[in-house]
Image 1 (cartoon, rainbow, N blue to C red):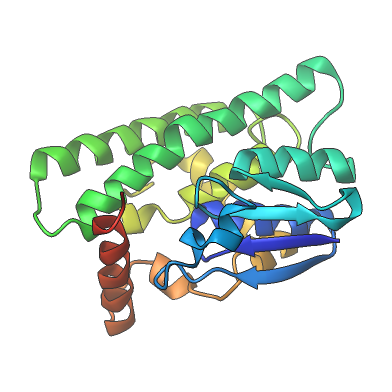
Image 2 (cartoon, one colour):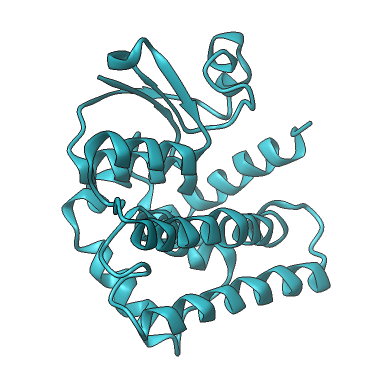
Length: 231
């Protein structure tokens, strides 16, 4: 059995979508980032970095795995799904997974910080990160003009990138004019595993649409508190 420790963030969704898509049974442990659950000693034993998501595989002598990309690879290998075993196919998937981890995630994360959370609006910085996010989206769009999915068949690379790209409005970056990317976003959105995964541990889809509701403003205030409190 997989014990999943997560919160409603793009990185958290990477793990929950993978579990749902692979039909791997799991127990859910919701981590309250606002309360600092991720910094408690019990959680740090599982994830030394104090970040979600993390898993514990009780079938493997309570093996703990942290870092969302590592979790996805582990689950794919455990289930035998969504990660090819041939050298070329495996390499393609891991390349696009690393693209998300080294590019899409960090750049969208910085765009979120300065566009949504940082108290001072520094326009050159906002423009820099939003521009880089759009450039990365264009890289995805070109690739998706060549292939239905990023590495050929649907894989953990698509799950990882989709978990972030679907929140583009929250980063203040639109996808108009990127027809291949929009097609891909819609196709994955229709998958039952993806639909279920983004509701773990709670469903906050309306906030990810960046509607200026009271709930969205409260979410931004709470996230700003976390950002300002980071070591």
